[in-house]
Length: 508
Image 1 (cartoon, helix red, strand yellow):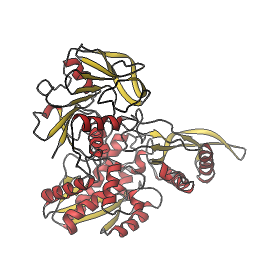
Image 2: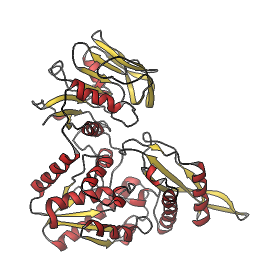
Image 3: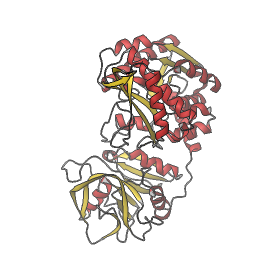
Image 4: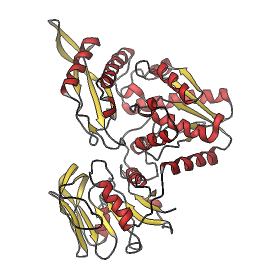
């Protein structure tokens, strides 16, 4: 099967590159730079990822492309482009103007890679270094106002570099550029599909698990539900599902989720462990510690349930790639840790169950496509993402039943209002944050000194990048009034208008 090799230099976007390639029906594999040895006959091209390092650092990650240049198409992105330029006589300098976020191409050449990309096309930048000079054997393919060498090719060979990130959703013509590379340069035939992924995943689960039992914790969201369907398809009745009330769920969520699983034919046991989690979190304000405590408590409960069942060797999880890349490097590469996720970086180092994560290399929208193929109920399929640690990471500071109760009501009003005004489907994820501050207010001619909550709504495709949702002012005004009037203890509502990056979707 034809494939594209992606050499990972630690970029937060490496798996996003793979995902874009798969969207175009071409199979791709990610290999950490330190483990890259050679290619095989099925390799149609090589992509060099971005990364957090500077190519000028003495110990920066490097791979010598000399033996492949001119023999197989190569595309360097951001750090990868800088590496190609430096290895071919160019110079890389720390940029006077650090370019992050959107930029416009004010020059686009007539080249194979940039075919059908128009001048002023929006691209996504994320870099501190820039390509200062290039040697005479380079052609400049694209420029922005601040970055002269935004794209280049080497003369007489299929070696290319882009300073921007075509894999990111906000690069408007990014998918076109990647398609040009795959189709016109690498000559790929495009035969890889989501159905192929499902078949491969089921076969991989069968080969790994065999006749052993798997215990899976369900959250009510699309990730764990799709993971359950894949596991069920592979091992049938050897899958045991649980839904745990950790005391950090949204309003009515425990009962609603248990009811929803009856429709998809999964045998799910509900476990009420509210006091176990809340007692363990008393006095804890550090977000990383919260995640680790929650992760540990989940595992303790799972291991107890496994002993009751007997013969359980595996813990199934609905971990998706954004969880992985923000916690640890999924492939052993050098990606920078952003935060732990309770099901990744929050897991204890030693536990009695082996972990199986059939979705760990795909993104949220891909998970939904898999779920559609498997016939998942639409109410679960299109439910907004909700973090595994629940409201624990939406309460900044210490957690108690009072602020949990306040936040539940605020969140419920916000989500139900989005549905009422037919805005829910236009938002990728929404929720409320409880802030560790109080402000002065006036209610009924009396002074109040109460809590502040922040509403958060974003649009995204995959969770790797996200824009804040431009919700109507009239809607925000009505929601704010409703919250302040109905939720005792809140006298101020703010709206988060930061995007990812530089922010994250969740506050902790």
